[in-house]
Image (cartoon, rainbow, N blue to C red; front, side, top):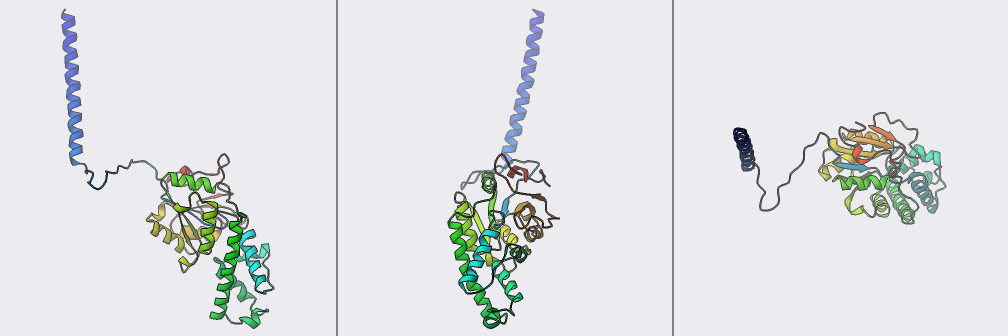
Length: 299
């Protein structure tokens, strides 16, 4: 009996202590609740979990050479078609166009080229000086070239590079914003987005063409994208394929992953945060969105 009484007394003591512990815990929870911000009548309280790493706030893709291999069989081809239509006996070869790609922007590329052949016909007779008349002529050529390029895009002749759609999907599913930042004509870039990424097009912003005065390697287009999207440049990841694009992204204070393209295979990418041959489809991926965290697999 005494043993039973002792056990009963011990049990009561444990129960009282547990009750006191629970009461203290409840009081502490109530105290925290009393000082915590309350949900407003206009919306519910948003709770954000803490973690020891950060996902990117935005993935910013270049267009040509990153989304699609557009340069050799898209842009170069339609530049040449435009020259022929306008009676210009000039044709950009594959290697020559590779050198011209060091100049960012289609109109700028043509201007650079025409300045180098201004002593040849028909430029010698038609537009001997680099003045407003020549600039208007180049602008008309570029508009026509864009029309021809969009016809190629609409015909489905420029498929996405491996892994692009997968990375876009992963980014959006994880709450990151996605945009395309390019020196190419805005209509051309929007056309590629709408044709090749139609499922996600409404959620992908486009910053392209003359939206900024200074083109890559200047950081302006990436800086504008971050400001417009309302994201921290340090938490943006740029996907580029050329040295001038890489330099633009780094100058904007962003992480840069390079996916080499046909024309950029041998370029110097010293300074890039990571360099790959492609993004890669599922099962053959080179990297995923979850590996672009800070800290993460590459920085």
